[in-house]
Length: 605
Image 1 (cartoon, rainbow, N blue to C red):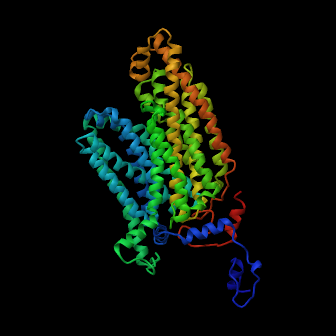
Image 2: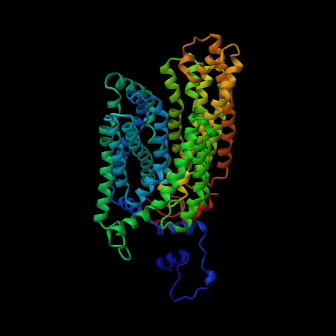
Image 3: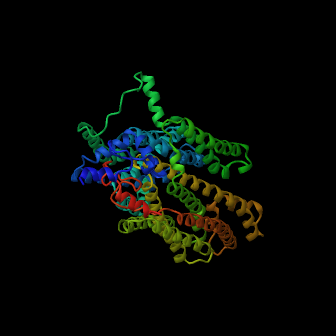
């Protein structure tokens, strides 16, 4: 038998023209295969370009690309660990310190809603173009902030910057998934967070030196220089590879047949590819859900405020409108039906949601709790606050390394979530007033260990379960759902704190008048002014411990949910392919079309 005949026999649905094969003898494609083929048919230019670019990279240009990713990761980390220190000084310069929370809410909404927009744009255009747009927003934002003459300009600059910040985070994850096979992806993804290990300890010194010697304006403004310098190698390399691939004819030219020739028609066609209506509906819904969740704890009458209720109701009512548009009308939907039927993606999103829900219940008031209950220096409290972040990074790298050799992720995920649950559960005791310093620190390390394993494993799982054309938007939607979980956690923590703390202060400080108790509730500086051993401070410490325990019990219960969900997660094989659901390699070529793919699928349950 010839090689050609073997190839035809190995390919379902491909029959000889001169042989009459009964219809029922042709294998039927399963639902997963149909979804993959549909996704391939809907492939955007950006995905085709990145696959073509993979064919032109040489040894040195590929390493130059990795160096670019490293620089982008470092500047993202340095930014995230320093600039948040400057906001209090910036708002105070305009006598608007009270607006910090409002600005932070707007920033968090942009960071959440911007992810699917940027992911879709990167698919429709190219990764390099998306990076360039993100860089533009980054630089403009910091220029506006650094030159602001009022709080309005400051807020506008932070909104522009938030687009760049969330875009850099997302695109770095996407480009890593573009250029790494599954067996290496967890390790490389973990390594992109490695700069947090360094910056967790140096950022406080950097921020202090900037504030003491240059002022907050330079603290923001220097990133208008540092970010372009750091991103340039990556952007230049991406553009070079894309242009070389186009010159070599490796990027298929878009067909012009049936396409509009007028400018308006082409703009509308581009808008359809982006699914502008779907993105607007998703962004509006998420914003209306996130705003009350983050504003309600500080709003007048809190959840009894009609505005909070109205925003939340309208945001939730938009969800079926999104489903209707994406299902019935969108030409290239942001949330295709195949996403909602993909068990791995759905489970990864819900695991992220409940994990962040639990995390923010424990973390929202942790810094304040340590300041009040521990006689540590401010520098040591700051270092403690970084403990979990450093552990997340270190053990995220360890998780990626283990997945490289195990070629599986499910039990890395399960073990990580189990350790995370243990860490949260132990916090119930360690947050008592008499807990030792070692116990307090070790619970953070345990949570970082479990969280590092879980975050890397769930990210790789979601990316492995979809074809390349769906990878960017899948990553964005999982991250979006995770951040909504964090917002819910912060809102619940704020609700528990504001409802329970006054009662606990009254319980532990019965001899203190209401005015003093209100002052102690409203300002940690008033509490810190009291010496340890003072009856009033000891009463506040007991009240803090009681309220923290309530939040930690709830967080422990919630931490059980992602652990249970992880047991139902498929266990895709992490091999030498871009994803685990088709036979495509990084170049978009089908190397071994069937046997290997089927072997991986059969062992994924």
